[in-house]
Image (cartoon, rainbow over all chains, first blue to last red; front, side, top):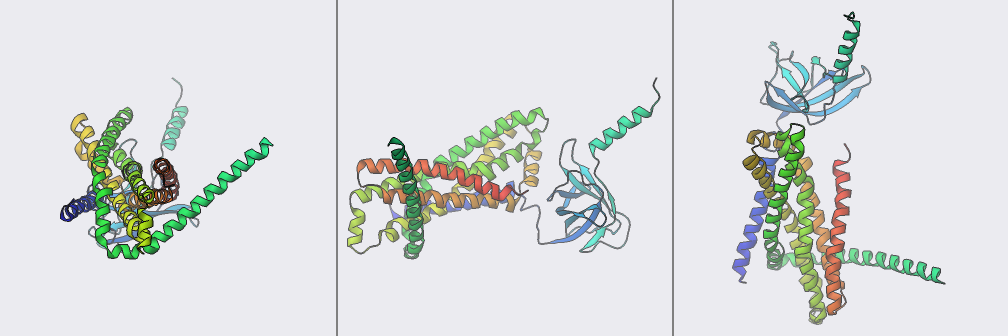
Amino acid sequence: MERTTIDLWVGIFVVAGIAALVMLAMKVGNLSTYNVSDSYQVYAYFSNIGGLKPKASIKSAGVLVGRVTGITLDTERYQAKVEMSLDKRYQFPQDTFASILTSGLLGEQYIGLMPGGDDLMLKNGEQLKKTQSAVVLEDLIGKFIYNKAEEPAK
Amino acid sequence: MTLARTFRRIGHSAINAVWRIGLATRFFFLILLYSGSGFRRFHLIIKELFSTGVMSLIIIIVAGLFVGMVLGLQGYETLKRYGSESALGVMVALGLVRELGPVVAALLFASRAGSAMTAEIGLMKATEQISAMEMMAVNPIARIVAPRFWAGVISMPLLAAMFSAVGVFGGYFVGVVQIGVDEGSFWSQMQSAVDFREDILNGVIKSFVFGTAVTVIALFEGYDAPPTAEGVSGATTRTVVTSSLVILMLDFILTAMMFGGN
């Protein structure tokens, strides 16, 4: 086969391969939706994080605003310290309320942010003071059974 | 003395295996050493890219499409029981990008391009073309082997990416177009679950490693083949068998290193 034809086909091949990679990154992966470089870090303490995992999404009014970057146990207060990285475009008041929620009945857990009314905005490295822990299904069932047992028999 | 003979045979084959691994490793470093001159004659690599990469396109695209479609169908059947059909996109994309894309593409590549490489070099050796090159003071590793090696290493990640991309569309076709899973949740759940660095880049690294392993095995078997018709055919068979096993073993090791830690 002629050299120009071979060059043409190899060019098509390489371009198609790179296009497939870009398509995987943009359409299948999350490269287009979340950019790591423009973000600021905040943290919060939860008494129970349930099934929250690193890289879980952080949403406010249902919109993805950041990701959980790290979860550690603080041995001074025996609470879970959750570090989050939020998109710089979204600023939140200092009295923002963070709660661990579940998407759907069996879905994955995420952090929901409910903005407060403070004029001061959260800055890099600050703490979200108001938090609500995850609802653990076993505790809920346990409470329910306990309450049932308390009721006088009919 | 049959016992001694059995042990002797085991020892012989063990020494032989280690010997061949050592030879293959030395061969790999020789390729790297002599690839400098191969890059100066880049048209040689382009010619090999045509025969290894472009000619494998059809089989990779067709196989990727069907693997994605089967994943869509089977995944739907399983996920339907738990009422989470909307996670079909996640399942198809993660399965393809992490495992099936690199592994199946590498297996196809080994049988499509690797066997051809072995047979070609084995026949060159059998017809004494390689000895003739040495007589003309042309280094056969730099002239014949290194371009094929780099063509394999370059084309393997591209082929695996195309396999995954086509497979995702196969899953989309069966899941969304035919069965009727919600299109929005198919793509959005996929995008929120597939991480660029964690999943896609690791898949690319995997296919890069597989490409290196397959081409080194194929070239070594060809270069090392006994210069007879029987020797070349045996070497071709060994290429496909060995590289398939090596791909699957390396896949386990790489998966354990990449995704096993959490």
